[in-house]
Image (tube, rainbow, N blue to C red):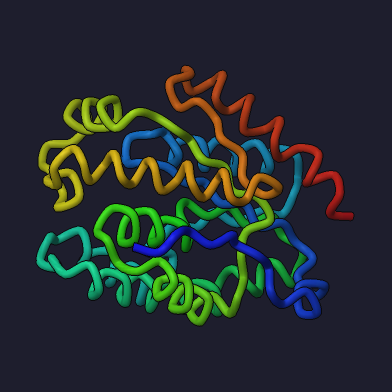
Amino acid sequence: MNAGLPLVRSNTAERKYLKGLFVVLEGLDGSGKTTQAIRLYNRLKRRGIPVSLLREPGSTAFGEKVRRILKSGDIDDPVAELLLFNASRSCLVRQKIRPALISGEVVICDRFSSSTIAYQGYGSGIDLQRINRVNDYATRDLIPDITILIDIDPIISLQRLQQTRTSKDHYEQNDFSFHRRVREGYLKLAEDNTQTWKILDGTQNPRDLSISVWKEIASLVGLMN
């Protein structure tokens, strides 16, 4: 598998028209990223800041259909997963993310293209350069202004999922080494993109973690105007 590539915004001319702030939360299932995305959304809403909360896959009619397919466990081919995620992602960028950024909103997304790199790339072994090409095409080269990685050990991730879910999805059914590789992939992405990635300790209690997330976002929100 090829080494990871830094995530560089390649279309700076177009970016000037995207006046909003694109925030992505990443991490293993069970890390608490969804809870933190909701808390950040509510905090911004209380302050009267225009904000959208989205998720991957999902948040469009097509994306929700893709989500049901992927959650069903019927797809056991990583390449098919890669293409399905990016088909959903393409619709999400075109229908939701880009219009919101053009209008000046803060866009919070629970997962984005880095999830595909971590899971289908580092986890399942698809060539990273191929993933990057597909990701870039689906997103029109859009990358987040900031990615917050809620980092936890895979052991804790799986323990949390056992406590909160009645059945395992097909990712949870993978052996422990898969989840370890996914975490290593996320940490490598953060290491390669230190200007736009922040790592937060997912073992903090949710309230303290939400404060840590806000500290990373507050100054960026202030720079939007």
